[in-house]
Image (cartoon, rainbow, N blue to C red):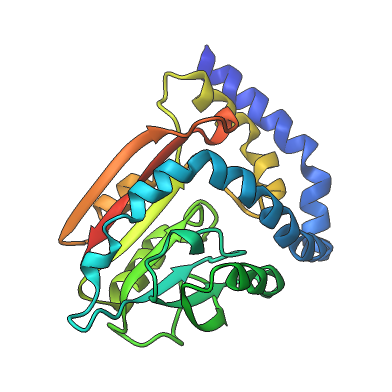
Length: 244
């Protein structure tokens, strides 16, 4: 009964978002992509306040993947406005990638606020195809709140393995689908069609940990947790790191 109700409500939600779908076909949705970086930049401050403890825990051992001379080359997929910069080790070199070029203005602002890092370049590229980045050229890859909106999680993870040096680490933090018996699961599936457009292609029903388990890393350190003080739709989270 609950499953049937969920499907019915999801169908109704799809009908309500039909105008947004038509706008996307016409091409006007590209205007939202120009506005979205400003929205994301402002949300970053609130999200980082709530997730500060979790992010510090996530990145606390990153220095152990540095080279013998102490250097650490880090590439961030979907860097957005640079929400993670404050948590990176002093002196590491950061390569920024994002498919949306309109983030660059806010990215520069974050760079100015985090001068403990060295910034290499900003590459406008999708996570599924980072051909501009050489094989085994970085020590660490970071991806937070990005795998929810890529077209292929599998392809992104294969690109991560390609560009990581042997022994390098992939750090992640993502919201994921809730347990099937929960009301959060119900509303995630009902509201996903609307969330997709408001969240710039974000999916709230992905079991991303399964993709990580199947990606072929030599080690996977993964933790499920409930994010504090965020909307219930994205409260279920995973975080951790994988080693190539």
